[in-house]
Image 1 (cartoon, rainbow, N blue to C red):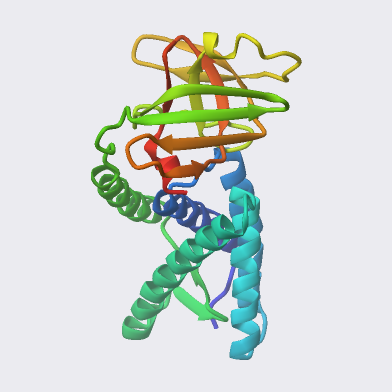
Image 2: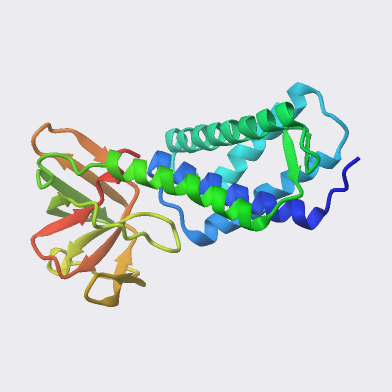
Amino acid sequence: MQTIYIDVLIVLNIYINYFLLKTTSKITSSPLSISRCILASFYGSLFSLLILAPELPFFINITIKIIAAVTVVIVAFGIHGKSRLIKNTSAFFSANFIFAGAIYAVYSWFKPQFMHFSNSYFYIDFSLLLLVISTALLYAVLCIFKRFSDKVPENSDSYKIIVRYKEKIFTAKGLADTGNALTDFFSGKPVIIFGKNDFVDLNKVRFRLIPYSTISESNVIPVFSPDETVIINTLTGEKKLVDAVIGLGENDGKAIFNPKILKN
């Protein structure tokens, strides 16, 4: 029987979980901070210790896998409503299923001596360099695909954004721009950038500063969490409740948001 090193097993699964969570983030366009991704990857790697257990019945095994997928997604992305949780969990579970299926196919066909498979978890006496290169290439392909598929909507300036904070209501014209990739590091939520003059009557709000960078500069921007944010397509009348934080920049006149948040 092949010797399984616990440290190698954990490191392998942390790396793979990180890759699968980033893939999930790309598929569902859900914000994912590096810190939460690492934490969720480590937590998910602990389930890989089941490879050391006796072969489990199918029902128990699949139940554990579902629990693992749901809890890993909650750690990584939060809940943010039932539909978003189901969407992220389904994408993560599907990515796991496809990846594990490919690994099992290799295992079944070639029976490599450096691979061990049990309870739907696998262990590879691996070359770390080979693992990094292969997963990096797969992720790069996914990023290229998403870049071409995530096009800026037509009439990208035909939006109105309404923000509610306590008893105050603020509105501004919205501009969909994929160039705004700013994400709040602490919550993992996307940032909608308003002009400072759009919130001149905002009192007693708790701001925090997050870093941002452009081609010409690096600086910090004040952000806060509103009670509610709605984006309205002024051409179709369609309304979308979005989960985002509000940043105050120098772009007076229009609020800039990434169109990906309309898909969440």
